[in-house]
Image 1 (cartoon, one colour):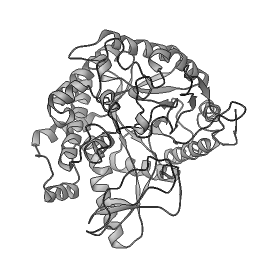
Image 2 (image 1 turned 135 degrees about the horizontal axis):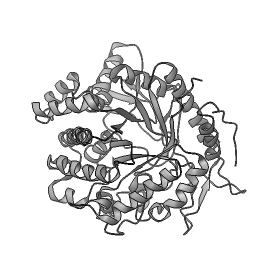
Image 3 (image 1 turned 90 degrees about the horizontal axis):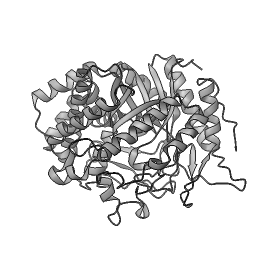
Image 4 (image 1 turned 135 degrees about the vertical axis):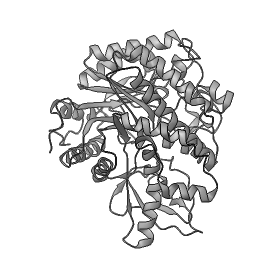
Length: 476
């Protein structure tokens, strides 16, 4: 095991809509998720974040659990519609003041995400949200207010969380708001997130703060199914329109040429404005780090022009129900016979994390924080009132080992955030899919918190600064 830096940020993560509840409390404005989750058929069995884990009212209790865990950092998001409605909403601003102060008093570093998908509904209704360039300046105004309010205490800022996922689910698969299936709109909305990220990074630097700032991308490294040229070419296509499209724009200020040609030939590419790329390159020169959310790898194969297209995601939690998916004539995702899969058919591949981190370091030469990594599962309370999630311990242990290996191979890794600190609302799977180190009894009115076996395991990892990761800890 390679020794992690002494100041390594061992932590866990959450997102405002998935935990806070209090959806209309203290002047909070509606978000697109407050609306979407109440449309019949849009969420798993009608679940919503109206109450969630009630973190808004129970944040002090949650910090106490974080203290018991010994967390070095806590990654959370600020709810844009809670704190901003053309000007600051004081009650919402104060909530995060208190949360940040409480974390710092507990010796826990706040890692703040500015956008984790809860767009103000008013902006969606007024001009289409991320479909309009107007959102860029509106976002920067909101971000500037957050920097002014919290910048003296928050030293780690994540501008965007998984812009590749929320734009794809919202504008290709129609599973997230606004529920469209339009490739041109997907590309345009993603480009607007890049512009918002760049302007926000430059604004932060202009304001003279001493902290660091970046964004987090969902990263799924991939392998070719075989060495045949058709499969290796498909892998290149996957990377060009997938990971490198998303990351090159954020961290190089450009898009891959192969993908530009592909989208131009399809007639779905937005207008390329030279000044946009001047802006993106300026931000790429001063961005401090890249965040990655890593859950799985993919295996890529040739896909003929009459081959498989986009398939429905496995939201049933029944292993083996995910079918092949792809872009006809370009590539397809197939099952990897060499690894295991979760109940939701997500590939379990800790070695892929090391492989991916090394590739990112070669390509971008930036410090990296793993802003999310975790296992979604059906956690149950046993007859002793315990949650013996040894399967999660095994998963996390091997991924921490992969991080150590990556550090030994030259990756500048400065933090690891488990998704998630408590169980929370899954965007597509409701409350059935649990990720937390702390169990939430969603059937009980009091939303009782119960630390899982993985909580005890992670406490030892943190205390040993990643040296003690063995997973023989079963039960509490």
